Image (tube, rainbow, N blue to C red; front, side, top):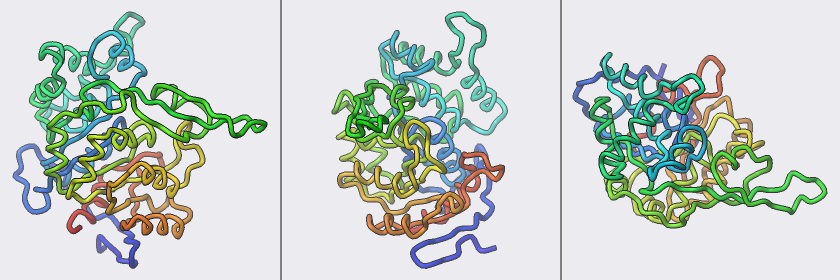
Amino acid sequence: MEPVLDAGPVRITAPPPVPAPTGGERRTGRERLRVVALGGGHGLAAALTAWRRLTGELTAVVTVADDGGSSGRIRREMPVLPPGDLRMALAALAGEEPRTQEMARLLQHRFGGSGVLAGHPVGNLMLTGLTEMHGGDSVRALGALEQLLAAQGRVLPMAEVPLDLVATVESTDPDDPQDTRRIRGQVAIASTPGRVREIRVSPADPPVPVEVLRAIAAADVISLGPGSWYTSVLPHLLVPRLRQALAEATARVVVVLNLEPQPGETDGFSPEEHLGVLLAHCEGVSLHTVIADAAAVVDRRGLLSAVQGCGAELVLAPVAAPDGAPRHDPQRLAAALASVVGAR
């Protein structure tokens, strides 16, 4: 089967087989693409798992606004970045050798029981300890773990300081629909009923690691999504220095839309509404390609109109897990990405 069936401006892709990466192979052709993937959590991990099938020049730029669970406990007790999303990105890039895969599993392992360590992933504590050893330098700490994991890419924080998200959320009271609430914190925003009307970061203009700015400037491709739209994807566009770097980049910008709305953040959102929210925060950042799961799009004309309105190309492809679970399948997503990274 041909990998791409051209249907005018909408390219509907049938995924060709994509070879799994091997630890020491030399990458050639399109595999020399320099890719920067922005996001956080499970969505970014899925994107990284897909991208690493296509390139060894891969940099993850990770949100640092998590304030729940182990990350929340650590950032309240220590002057460090919340480590959870960074840990997940590291695990997604771990080398293929049995030793490095075992190390990745160790990073993800959570302590059981009911003591003070209960619920902490080992990797969160390792990254926190390394950051302290390196005088608070999170980039050096991440580099040390990348070496331990023989990582097939690099992981960087989107900011040098922990961020708080502050959202204006619409009322769910039918008697006062114009009322809004200001909600602070990633966990609170995700669990508060009502649509998010506005979101910002605090501090408003945090410092961005120079390594992030260099990676964006040198990138051939930059990807946004999938992931929690307001708390993992949009924050990258809310940091002025990061948004300016994205606006000045010469890279192809690829957006991967979510498979379904996320309760508490994007309840009832269609794919085109997800895109509309993103576009409202771009402020000079050009989008070139939007990838959506073919089965998840009900109104193809509506999504196509939204995509064409921002001058981008729409690619509809089967990127969801074949078992019906609401998650992206790495091999299918890699095939969709491979079909669009060959030309601007």
